[in-house]
Length: 340
Image 1 (cartoon, rainbow, N blue to C red):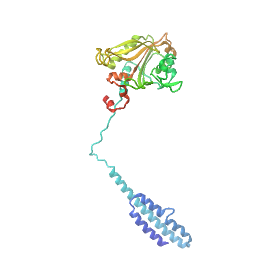
Image 2 (cartoon, rainbow, N blue to C red):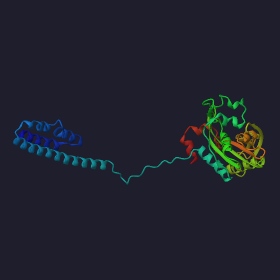
Image 3 (cartoon, rainbow, N blue to C red):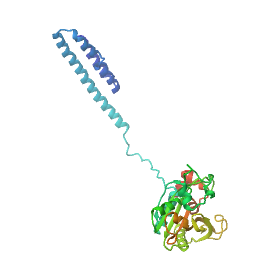
Image 4 (cartoon, rainbow, N blue to C red):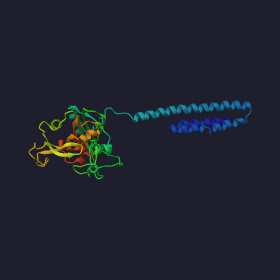
């Protein structure tokens, strides 16, 4: 049995010496020191020996086992150190090589335009309010004085989720949400995404952005509305900009108007951008309808107000002379990087 131990020790030393990686070392450890190893088999057979022989063989077996374990441990350290050096060499950075150029992105033109619009109105004392994109039919239509048979309610125009909920078709629901929780004076704008069942073409998109404006206080008149929009036009498009109001109809304002901007391209002389008229439609507006004020528990005999809403894409297309709304949503970096 002692000869077997010496033979096994010699064989183990040779195999451990030849081992070239940690996986082989682990295999050898199991082979010589594991529960099913030759060493375990020898130790189990010692029960048949006399007491004195068992003591002597036990000492010899423990010595052989300790030697093998020690050599395996030393070999592991050597192999780990060798692997570490190889890894360090492989991951070494040559600091003399030129670095990789960082490709910086830029803000999307829609984001830029929203920020420009909000900056203009914040300079006039407006605060910013936001609302959910999934709205109730009540907030989107009923509370805004829209008739039950108004064409905008049709499923061909509106994305309904249920009978009670829809994807908002305008940012105007923020108007009713604000007047229900905030008492006058109110002076807010609400930028955000809107959704309508439009087929995408050069001037339409099923998803678009609006900025709604709302002012309510005592003594607010159409003159205040026109003055606010004139100031917006000059700050947004330049001091040359002029506006004019044309009568129109919106359910939630009375009287209502469309607002035209003097053509920035031709200065009002007439060109292809303004279709020869010298004017370009930019937004809708009007005095807040008394029924809307009542819906928000605001006394229309004491308070008046005005509201306006503009399409962000339309403003961006006018300001940056973009002729197709689809360019905003195609994620073509050549187009987006023009706004750096």
